[in-house]
Length: 232
Ligand SMILES: *Cc1c(COP(=O)(O)O)cnc(C)c1O
Image 1 (cartoon, rainbow, N blue to C red):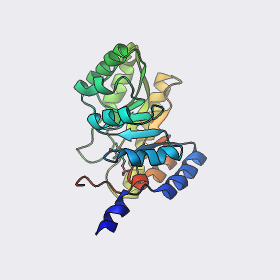
Image 2 (cartoon, rainbow, N blue to C red):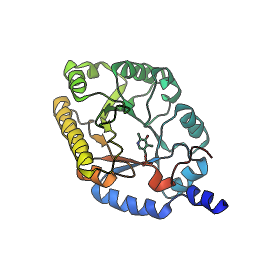
Image 3 (tube, rainbow, N blue to C red):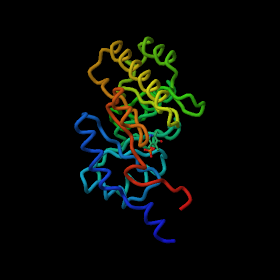
Image 4 (cartoon, rainbow, N blue to C red):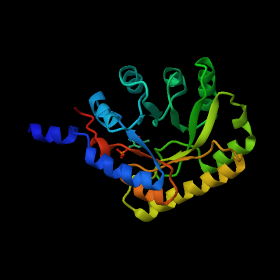
C-alpha cells in the first residue's frame, strides 16, 4: 500500500502555481501552512520561491527555523501560550493569533529582550464553534478604544486574523468573513495607522470566498502540502 502514503506526501507544485497566480492577481499574500510537514516539503516550495511559512506548534517551529534557510519568514498561526513567546521572539515574522492583553504584554517584553519589533495580528472570534480562540468584537473594540496598544514600544499590531466555522455552508462563511472585514475596517479607521493593513482570513477550503470578502493574507496548508496525517 506504499502508493497511498506517497500520494499524501507529495508537495502539490501545480496547485502552488495555480494558487499563486490567483493570489498575485488579487494582491493577496500567501502563508504556506507547513505544520506537521517535513523540512523537505518546505524546501520544495522554497525552491519555487515561497518564503512565508506558517506553523502552529512552538517546538516544531523552533526546530524548523534552526535547520532551514534564514530568509524564510516564519508566521506563528497557532494558539500561543505566554510562557512560550520567548522561544520564537528572536526570529518570528508575524504572530497571527494574539487573543489577550497578557499575551501582548509578554510579546512586547520578549521583543525588547531580543531587541526587535515584533508584528502581530489580533485574533477575532468569528466562528460559530466554541473551540476557536480570539477576542470577541466588543472586547476588541474596548481594547482599541483604551489606547493601550500605543503603550507597547516593541510591538506593531498589523491587523486582524480570524478562522471561520468548519463548514461547507457558503452563506455562513460569507457572513463570518464579511463580519470580520467590517470589524477590520472599523478598527483601521479608529487606529488611523498605516501599519494596520493585514487581514488574515481564508484557508484551503474557503480562501476564494475570503478573498472576495476582503482578505489580504490567506493561510493555506493541505492544498499545497497534501492532507496532514498526524499518525505517520
Ligand atoms: C492548519 C491551519 C491552517 C491551514 O489549514 P488548511 O485547511 O490545511 O489549509 C490555516 N490557519 C490555521 C490557524 C491553521 O491552524
